[in-house]
Amino acid sequence: MFTEKDNALINQKFETLRLASLKRCANQAEYEEVLKAFDFAKAAHHGVRRRSGEPYIIHPIAVAQIVVQEIGLGYKSIVASLIHDVVEDTEYTVEDIRALF
Image 1 (tube, rainbow, N blue to C red):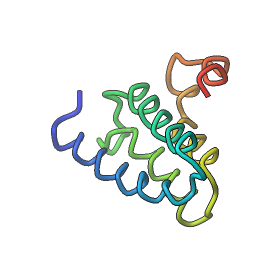
Image 2 (cartoon, rainbow, N blue to C red; image 1 turned 60 degrees about the vertical axis):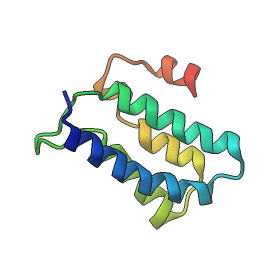
Image 3 (cartoon, helix red, strand yellow; image 1 turned 180 degrees about the vertical axis):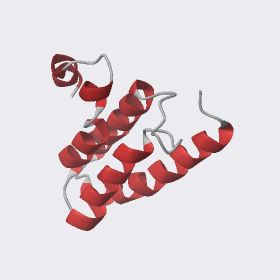
Image 4 (cartoon, rainbow, N blue to C red; image 1 turned 120 degrees about the vertical axis):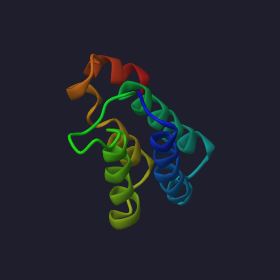
């Protein structure tokens, strides 16, 4: 399980990404896909930690941050970055991801 400190860190990291994403989304529907991807990835990786002890979801957020701020890609790339490890690390399948996104 995550502590309050873990959840605060996750929310802080995502808030930075969320604000950057607003600039890359052309409309509300695209923005909502980013939010949906974050919620999905966060739930899929709930309670999972990296070897460092950090909540796993911090990694996909960091990748998405690079995609949006350093490379300047759009919402589809942000979504893909957030969910990129879900199939590899959870019980979700590629078909599940296709159906959801």
